Length: 375
Image (tube, rainbow, N blue to C red):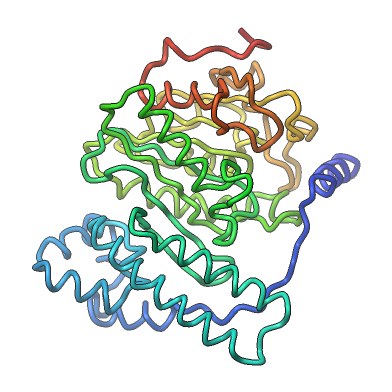
């Protein structure tokens, strides 16, 4: 088994996964959250923080009061499951402007290391991009490596909601990219949305780039174990449970994000069962069978030159992520990904993988093409 772990670490290392330190300011949400809890919940916060309770709370406020709370507590309201989407968008615009101010002030001090200063400048650039008028940011947290959720489409009218869950090394700095845009969460979601609309221009659909968990930082124990996936699964389940009940929800998960989705789907309540759970380039989902996942249909794909295929699909003493979802015994429907290359090419334009994911999102299951290897 030691040899197995050496192989895993070796593959990750040769794929360019390296850790870099950073020296960011302390979590800016802590004091704001405490003040919010005192204002809204009083001593019985736990009983009042469910999405349904939050929704009722905001429904009892007039528009001016909702806007006031978004402006006063942006880091809370902007990440509050159950709050109206438009109010969360507003709150996150406020939070982004505040984060830009914080970074710019910090960059003028002598506290930033050379690496930290470079990251600070990159974060200002990222925040300014997220503030663009055509973007809808449903979640934003600048603490640590940062987290973000972006909605593409109209969440309030969507009949189908597709959630893209990315894998390792996807903090705020990597939420979108200029070069290799389709390898970043925002680019993945945008390409999926565009392909869905190309296949069905009238589709009432929203695609969400969900990078709202702490991902493994390139190589490290986090990528080899399920600890971060378990924490991310808690957040993903809470997010899915807060989605509008009228809409059918599906998840499209890549790389380590498939571990998060697997853990989340093992504990979803029956009333929030997923329509589809689709995985690409999965190292395993910490389950041996698609039947253990709360999804009507489970789909999987992996191309031949994806380095994940070289990993041992085992789980031992907490290391590894278990069975191969594309394996014949797992029970997933294996779909074609012709045209995709490498570990990050599944959402590229013109690929069978992207076309098939759009067909899955639209419910056009008989049009999904099979993998040539397992037709």
